[in-house]
Amino acid sequence: MPKAAPNEWYSVRNSEIHGRGLYAKKKIPKDTWIVEYVGKKVSKEESDRLANELLESAKKTGGAQVYMFILNDQWDIDGNVPWNTARLMNHSCSPNVEAQTFDEKEIWFMALRDIEKGEELVFNYGFDLEFWEDHPCRCGSENCAGFIAAEEYWPTLRRKIGGKKAWLTSHKKKLAKKAAKKTAKKTA
Ligand SMILES: C[S@@+](CC[C@H](N)C(=O)[O-])C[C@H]1O[C@@H](n2cnc3c(N)ncnc32)[C@H](O)[C@@H]1O
Ligand SMILES: [Zn+2]
Image (cartoon, rainbow, N blue to C red; front, side):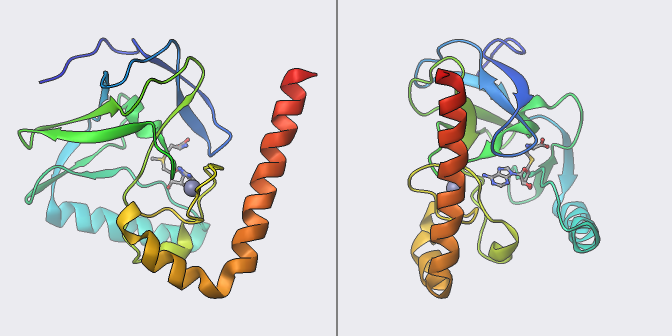
């Protein structure tokens, strides 16, 4: 199983994408094991119950944080515990990190490429399309799909967005404007 000292590679700070995120505190070479996704092991039944609860509260509050990770056919990991800093990793359509499962027991995040100091660590949440409209993506990457979804669903997503092309263009423009402002601030 991989190993990494806690907080060896990253620190936590406010993210441009959403809430807090993880940031590389030094250069992370490709294929480095960065952090384990820890939490409470829960049965699929319990996991479904928690997901429904989340859905109900999301209907009232308009937002929800998803912390459930599939471990195997029987068990999931509920990562919504304070000691699981990996839970703060945001989604991107251009991920620099990916999750891998070991012996159906541990979930670890690995660098997909060299990651520079200061880059936000992001992975593709791999959502299916069931509630796609509830998850607009704010990753700001050039190839952003507009909504949080696994890459395999992007062709279907593109067809679904078909009627919302104007929305997608203006959404991307807004994010690009925000990013440009940030760069201007940095260079000023
Ligand atoms: C597991 S939390 C990630 C940590 C979160 N930033 C925080 O401070 O708690 C997952 C939630 O973050 C938000 N999020 C993550 N990546 C996002 C993205 N690319 N676009 C929009 N929202 C995102 C969504 O609300 C998602 O349900
Ligand atoms: Zn995106």
